[in-house]
Length: 327
Image (cartoon, rainbow, N blue to C red; front, side, top):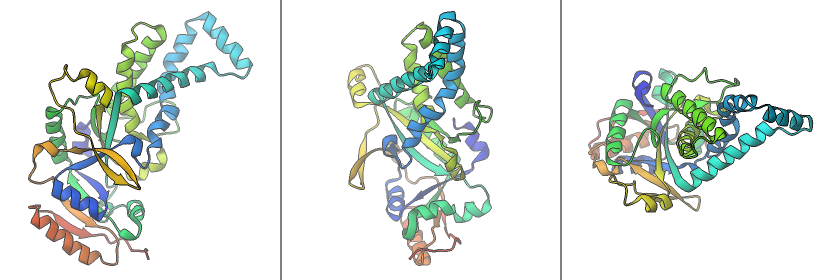
């Protein structure tokens, strides 16, 4: 899912705190957090409620239309105020979520893309607001460099097209089709879900359900409500087998699983993985750092310059011209 990033996004912006900036520069890794602990974690669940029905509808309606008995049953239920199609969709979605919870965990690292030159040099106002009086920092990464690191990671671990993605987030549109989607790999996952769902309805091969689960899990992590569209988000998404599944297949795999770490946030130990940790990098592909709005922004700029120099990173440090309105 990363090919078009090279063409459209030369740079990716990762907003973080002073602690996050120091950790990324010194560890030469990026932390990807478990999707259940993201600030917008409900978006993963929301995909099952908003977008998955649109994926399933064509196959479900076709399946019902093929059977006179089912058509009559649906019509009678509708007359009684019951939407059987909706019930069947919800039952399938529930089964998908339960299967995902048992078999695979997903971890996400997020970036923003700049809509214009001003944002590229000064950052996004909504992101600075998110950091409040603390100001925050934007680490601007070279996209090609990140992609090379991701490909190297994929060669180390058990990554595949179904468990590793690097691409644009898609935002819900007020239309019932997928004509607004330009990413061919996303459309391939959508079609796979439809094909597997059709097989599920006809009970041709229950094992095909698991292929649909992988695609649905990946799609759910790169789909968000349109209210977030200003962020123009890009995500690295990594799928890892659940601890139970890892034990079951340990003797069948040759590549290692990723190590799961944790960090404390608001009294909760958030599971995460450290991307690129086993590559032993000298530096990450950082182009520049933007110091967010803050009364001490010039002092912060000097501190960042020293931090980068001490870790062999040749990157420009800018100060955002966005006005500071904190306390």
